[in-house]
Length: 220
Image (cartoon, rainbow, N blue to C red; front, side):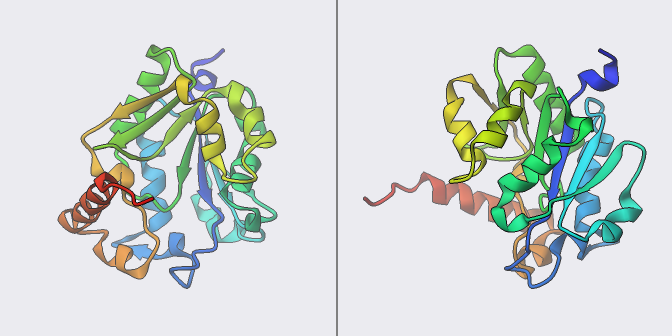
């Protein structure tokens, strides 16, 4: 297998409804670039990722066409109402994903450092595992990396709780990679998230608040 084909493909999910934002959040301006451009940078700059599959909503290809390159492919999810799992399936159905290990990354996580992506890939090829999930202080982040052999699982499972079904099924084969990078957990869902995004201190504080919330005991 060539070096390019031995590298994982990144499946970037951009077909969501952005219901809490009120408009397509991924095309919103964040500084001088759109949110999706920031998100794609991690996979374009990473040295251990080859192709990128950008999954968009039905009829949205023209909106994202300026982002296309020889290594960035745009595909449409015909029915995003079926949840994020439907976008993952659309990405995995592409010829560029065939028999390839694959990263899954929401398009609304804009500041993942390329170095973290490379660390995830390195952990995957050096550890005996089928999944690598980066985490920050116990909080799961992005992108996750999955073995090519799990592709069929995403087609057969996930209708109830999405990728969590696959993660639960293969929890013994999963490596949780602890990294000192809160941006793997910062996503943009609301206007407030977008407002704070360019201020590292503010966005990291929001991640730390989620970390503390996760530590609280749950009432039964």
